[in-house]
Picture 1 (cartoon, one colour):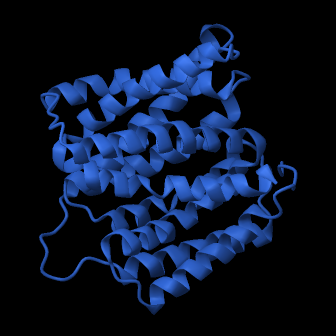
Picture 2 (spheres, rainbow, N blue to C red):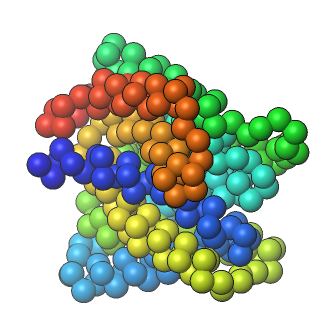
Picture 3 (cartoon, rainbow, N blue to C red):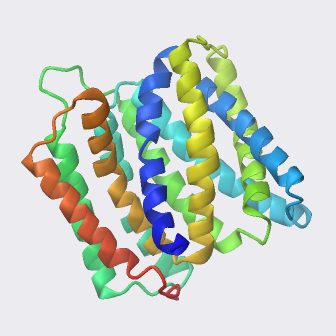
Length: 293
């Protein structure tokens, strides 16, 4: 039952990241926000790992592999997304660009990890992306708003490539360390890498209650809950199947925005959610399927 529920819990948690960013970014620079979050996250998870006597990485080589994965999955991906949103990119457009990740991951998994991607999975990847496009297209920004800066598009492209590379790297070099210990190493590496960028922003933070709430949510729900689930899913399943779950994130975010902020959900968005759900079902397959290699 846990294996069946875990992917859907991951989607529900992961989709709240854009909501947390919307709440918190007005009160801190994007890299400062992430700098604070990364360092709080490695302290939290490192403490849990020590308290639980978790298995830590074995030697400098495994630590280095975890650090590289952390730089890609946290500093690269989250840094790109937060910077793009802070520079005016609508969250829906950012979600659509990052929504290409399952396709790139499937191609990379086939080429680098020798994972076999079945025909129905390719169909699911295409259907899922079409569903994401319907959802985001229905919620596109109205005409007349200022154009999105080129720097935002460059940042979201970096985020897309970083999360794809990070997922593949984590699958290949994840090692045997406990998930909490591994995540602590990854967050520490990302926090160190983000320090110069946060310093360039002057470490600006307005400790408004809204920012504190957003930081606490992203720390406990995303950094601790969703990320540990993601690492567990990557360790257990083929990465192309895990990446397919990300197609459900933009529709889930749209639903959350409707419930929390009253943003409209028209027929195209509802059709897109259905298409994305069918696509994910085709990509992931049965929860008890063995990883395809």
